[in-house]
Length: 193
Image 1 (tube, helix red, strand yellow):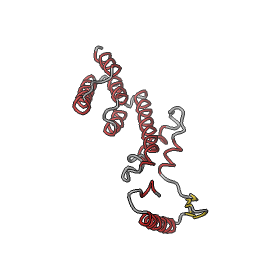
Image 2 (cartoon, helix red, strand yellow):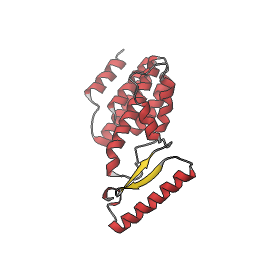
Image 3 (tube, helix red, strand yellow):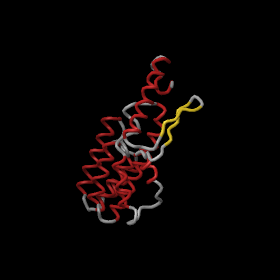
Image 4 (cartoon, one colour):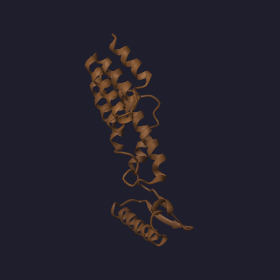
């Protein structure tokens, strides 16, 4: 209970717990879910039944090894399941590791799909997805590099120039850093052509 309601008294924490349990049971019943919240040996446990969360769905889809024409559509449908960091509105310390793991998987999925799109002549779609991803991760060198590669695959030199200069400006203004040498080298290689 300390991890959930560490900032309130034990008595108030118990009140929060019992209220939460009541609300969960009520919702399970209203939604005709076969899941149960059971109390046994001084502990609560959720038996999922037919209850499937967006996190469960997302994690089950992350077992792909390579993107193919057979799985690309299914993987595209997984992207909207990630709507932000896990439990971010609550700022629970115990959820931070899970939040980082899910964000890493989401980022990897979007980048893998963008690479597939680039390789299959869908650069515009790749840029759209990577732009959304870059809004979540504005300092990611890896995302910037992939975006430059996609622009290069579309022979869009202006896109490369705009992206690199905007990214560099963001790093300098927000963090006081220059892009990594790998990012700068890629920029030079793609614009020297």
